[in-house]
Length: 230
Ligand SMILES: C[S@@+](CC[C@H](N)C(=O)[O-])C[C@H]1O[C@@H](n2cnc3c(N)ncnc32)[C@H](O)[C@@H]1O
Image (cartoon, rainbow, N blue to C red; front, top):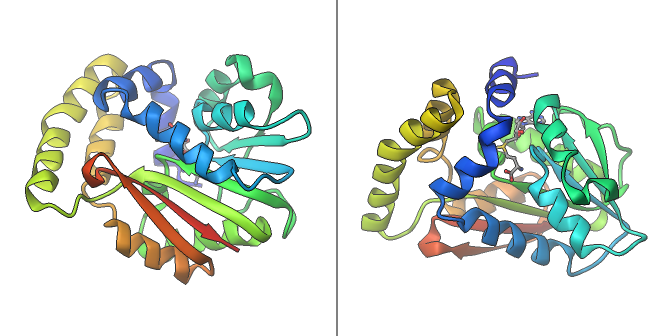
């Protein structure tokens, strides 16, 4: 388990959502909704939100499912999941404490895995990231979907530079000030500019064994939703 990352997320749960909404001007809410729609449109009985944090993606899944859909939210941070458990949708969500490295689910048992704004944390290096994606692939049933919502790298050089500048000057300061966790938001500002461009990340998903890999870019390529099928 990555104790450093766990420690960071133990410091920020209370203000985590507010800071995201402020820093992204609410774009994170729109993007989660869109990713949840993309992921859930093919149905299925069991939907899993990994690295669920305060449960915003899991809540979107719960709203889109019917009474028979089982929605599961996992994270290795109890403080983050405790906030998730206070949401009105929580009564429709099954919470599981788990590191994504080894998910506590059998092979071929899940119809949809969603992850939002967390893949950067799994990207210690490319091989480690592919290992995590293979674990998602293992628990998905054949035909099951993986949907990944994450910051990306705009193709346009000027927009990319502006995005990186914005992160450099705002995230550490605003995030650190509201949350009181300077380390947490220093970490965030470090990981965003280093994540993969959308086409390169699509290749990584393919390397993990997924087919029909596709992606949609949003907000000038600042954010991307990738989808892969087992
Ligand atoms: C930036 S938050 C994203 C939360 C949420 N998905 C969202 O859309 O806002 C990243 C979350 O990933 C969790 N996380 C990071 N590494 C993890 C791992 N190896 N296993 C399980 N959870 C992990 C953290 O505890 C944190 O709650």
